[in-house]
Length: 461
Image 1: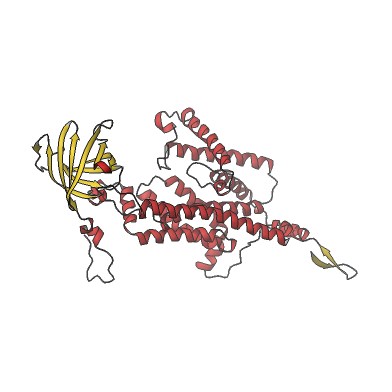
Image 2: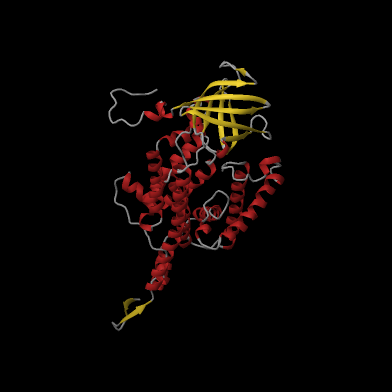
């Protein structure tokens, strides 16, 4: 309560809400265009950040309610294919949601985003018709910013910790070390470029985590938006320039951070460009805090909820990142005969095949890394991938996959010495004996070059 003077000179109390109402009434009215644009932006961002496939899911951070997001997703998984089929006349696999293939740029992703835009436009029209007398949307804008800040923050935490605990990118595999550069896809080139340097992976992850942390607090939200804008602009450019299939999603994230920055662009221009004094940002929510959050117990409750909400999400993200790093990187399972090998001899049906470069049937190199598969590079430089199952007590492995995926062949393996492995078995109906000589991966320049403070001349090969 605030004191005011009566005509008799006595101090009385008046409710702060009355003063706030008069202060709000004195604020300038939003233009018609600004109100319409805000209605659309609000509708779209609210829809986009609800639990859709591939998008951040704030409901997952609340224990006991993920079932709600599953029901919501089912609705869209019914609507979007229907639109693809009946509106755009699409047929075949593009009308079915892929089962976790990692692409965020499928045909249905674009149809889905278009559906969100259409629904947001319809919502904007309805909202404008029933609320056309509204002077501004300052309060809704405040809470929309909170919603977007948390959605963006949680997304950046997810991607950031996948780099802080380097699992998104890994050091080039044995197969990649001997693969010709010209066979790399643009995305494969980017993934191996990033995976080469663990320090850079962690650095880029910390940049995302820093932006995400700053977005959680009102006082640092503008700085967090600026940091996140730099990070996301780089991510968007990498996705577009290296054909990474997350273009649509990353572009939406960049638009979200731009939305957060727009109210501060004038202040930032005054401070950073025009060298002028600038006003302070209004951090308190319009009317709501003064009217409702003033009691101490409610302030403490709001802080406690925020700490628990964010803490639960971070705990799960960090725990998952560390466990993934231990299982996928530190303790990554290896095949019993793990290694990179040159084929010294290849005997098929009793006949020794000479290492002729045009021979598409003779093996040239074998890359054995995972217990589930190994890659063979033929003399003509084509690559064949075989699925494998090991029986270590019997020193045998079963291979299948190329060229007949249904047929399985059993090989025995032995180690005459630490540098050699001999495989004996049947391949496409013919008995084969393959003698492999180990190649030391540390001999590759990419692996052994390392870091140098001093370079008398550029070492660019």
